[in-house]
Length: 597
Image 1: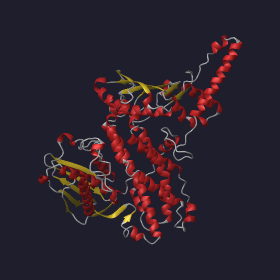
Image 2: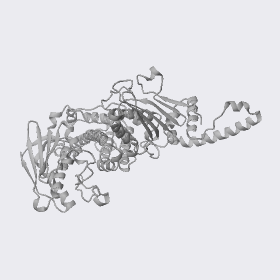
Image 3: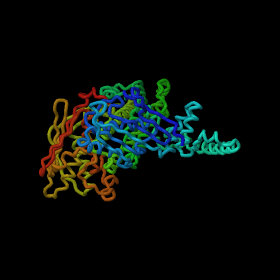
Image 4: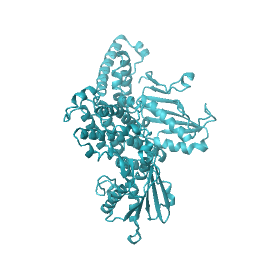
């Protein structure tokens, strides 16, 4: 195997040119990563050793990705720690989150100091290209765009990775008799032709989703994903989001919204795909999480390849309101289809993360899911607002605007006069029906406090949050003997530009030993039986429009993210052996108009 063929990657660290080394060096089937620390890519150095470890591994992961190598191909890790007695446990916890499944050999030693006094750990890694075929296939398009000479050079390198290369010793060739040398040369040429034939099979590019031909597997390393994910988001303020659906609705305004989304959606989907790609490899293999990853990837490809919204063409079609093939109509249909596909992905995410909880620490899980849910809320809000704007504009063209918007009450998804007490009553009735369907019984409830309270908000967000809080209170109440059950009390209040809802139960409260974990993802007081025994997602215990009565520990943490998205808050106060109060405080949306979506 020819070990002289090299591929080098730099990270732009301040010491690479000064000392004269590469961050990553590929030699034949071997990959070597130089000693790497937090801050190697120009990022600030975190204060804690755990965060430095995580940042360092992510820097290495990113650089390995440039040579199409994953952390699952790492075979040796060396860690140099300044204070091993103090830091070894937190370093071990972080490393276990990345390597629990593959278990490469590791060494951790203490050193007197590192080059910067802020640095507390340095990491080296070695990898072996045991997946050479995958690497060859992943780089097919990259090679095809290169010049002939460099292409031949990389082709020979890829042949070597496949384990089919026969090294040629120049000194031995000189010692061979001429005839024997000619025969050997002919034999080598035949072997080379066979290798080229084998290589050409590996280099046949498979069609990716959204490209002509049969749909292929989502490529883990995609130049399209990398290119779009590197672009910055172009957020809009909530004021702009509301303005796009404010009357009078115009065709030009609708076109501007469509063109913005046409540019923005591929960027946001690509960043979400990259977020999944940063998960430990074994977590991405989970069928529930992989299903969601594929859905996001497919939506990215369709968004990326959707034809541009042509202003001139749309103006020609404006008079033909029934032209279902117009660019705007097709775009709105794609958005509605994507929203439908992704409507119920969170149960899959919850199930997948519960099954993979041993591979992913609580802090890492929270960091990933908080970001994922925040990204999901933003894109769903942008998409839903445009779809609603499109429906309302069509209704205005047909003279049905007042009917479609309930006399101007709705601006897109936003209800400008949302009646809080009526929403609380409707949610409680729905959860009561859900309990009766799931358990054959349901507690009583009452709604009190301020009546005729209205504010400007997104109804779907409010209903989700109230539904989760009420499910917890109702389910806890049903655990008590029937003669001890008290009604769940829902109190509505209004302050200066803000509203609040308190959900109070007298079901014994939250045990002190688990109270600190109630906002942890994948933590639930519901017994973790098998899906066949519990069946929370089989549809038998669901009411349309509401999530299951009990799940896998996502209800409260997701409710907190939803509440805080527009500047609200969620707090729980428990009195052990008595009951629990959940306080949901929300601002009216017009007070948060400067928030970026």
